Each structure stands twice: as C-alpha cells, then as structure tokens.
Amino acid sequence: MNNLSMNILGFPAVNKDIDVEIRDVLTNAVVQQRKPFLDGTVTFPRMRPGSYEVVLKHPNLALPVARRPIRVLPKGPTKITMIIDPSQFRDTPIADIPDADLSPVRQVTEGVAALMAQLGEKEAGELIKAEDWNALVDNLRQTAEAVTELTRLVAPTGHNHPELEDKFDEVTGNFRSALEILNTAMVELQRQIQTLSFRKTVDDVLDSAGIDRESTQAKPWRDIVDRLEKEASKSPTQFSRVSRTAGVELATQIEKVLQDKPDLVDAKSVAEASAYSDLLRTTKATSYAAELAEQQKRDRTLGGTTVKAFKGV
Image (cartoon, rainbow, N blue to C red):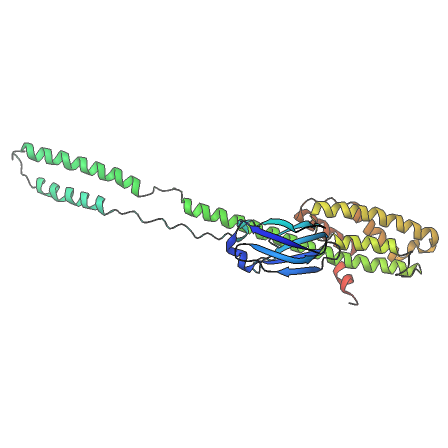
C-alpha cells in the first residue's frame, strides 16, 4: 500500500471547509475521507493501487466542487493536483463609487452671482468702467469653466453604472450556475428513479418467464440495469451512449425470452420492457436540460415511473 498526496489549488479561502473523498469507481463507496490543511495539502495513507475517483465537497454547494478519476500507482507515492474554480463561490459586493464633490462648482457660481448683483445696480447713463467690464468677462469665464466641470462630475440621463453592470453580470452568472446545478441534480435523481422502475420491470419479466432472478440466465438482464445504475452520474452525452447500448441489449434479451416463451408476447411486463427498450435506444440528449425533457417524455409514455419505482419499497 502507498500514500496518496494531494494539493488543492485555485481558491485557498475555502480549503478549511472542503471535504475530500476517495471513492471506489465500481461501487461509488467512500474509501477514505479527510479535510485538507489550510494550504490545500492532504495525504491519504495506505491506499491500495488501482483506480479511484476524487470528490471535493463544500457545505455551501449542493454538488461537488470538483471531481476527477485518478490511479494510485503500485510503487512509490502518488501525487495529484485538484483545481477549484473560484467562480463557484463568487459574491462580490457592489463597488462603492464616491459621490461627486460639487462644492467647488457651487463656490464659483456663488461668487459670480454676488459680483453680478453689484454690477447690476447701475442706472441709465451711468459710466461702465473698464474694470467692471473685465470683472464681468472674468466671471463669465469662471461660469463657463464651472459648467464644464459640472458636466464631468454629474452623469447625464441614460448614463451607465459600471459597478451595477458588473454585479448584474455576476448575479446572472451565479444564477446560471445554480440552475445548471439544479438541472444536474434533477437529472441524476430522475435517472435513479427511472432505473429503479426499470429494475422492477425486469424483475416482473423474469418472474413471468419463470426465471430465477439470481440465476445465470437472469444475469444479462441484471447487468443492463446495473450498468445504467452505475453510470447515473455521468454527463448527458455519456449516459445517452450507455442508454442506447442498454436499449439494444434489452431488445435482444426480450427476443430470447419470447423465443422460449411465445405466450408472453402479450404480457404487460414484456410490453413495458419493450417500451423501455424503444425509449432507451432513442436517447440523444447532450445537455441536462435536453435530458430532463426526454425523461419527462419517458414518464408520460411509461406512466408513473416514480410511483412504480417506490411501490412496495
């Protein structure tokens, strides 16, 4: 047995709350579970050589932060690196933009107003001195400069708020991530429910054909269901490929049973198994949203898979 050393990079702030699980790839059972040091390092002692899956979990996230398959080497320590995407924890406060100081502009305009009041007291025929004219021109210049400065300090109608736009973009990204997590969780849960319902249909077919569920003859049937159950956490593209293969294999097994027991051609269990086979063979989803739509169609076609899955449990 050898040690497995891991270094978690990407977002050190969450290292103290991360749980690291080493899972068996065949049974999905947790082999070892540890928490890393604050620097992201963690060691799993006495690991048997072979294939495993590393899963990083955080209490604030419904789905794992990261996961990847690994292989523990038969000789010497095994070292791996896990990368955390910081955007999964992003919650940036809105930038505080300081208010514009308009007091200099106000002081200029107040001074101009006071001088204009003095110059405005002249009567008809009174002499306008050069110094009065110069003062008028100078204050007019100051007013123009103050108005120009005001246009830089005060935003016009229809202006942008970059700090709000950045926050809205972040919230939108977080919402999309949350929606993707929800879709993923919903799809995986629905896969498990429909696989459980499928298993019951297979058991019904075996019982109708008089085949012992634990016999060698029943093993191909059980293997189809076990494979779907094992791959329930795969991506939509991978799971669609597995489903199509399972549909073809199921159709083959149905044909074999009907050759031996032709009187079962009208049996309800065989009809349900055939419907499963047709639906599995036409699975083409490449995204969680598309697969969720396919699962809803499957529920409508088969009728109450959830009820059947938990009936008698």
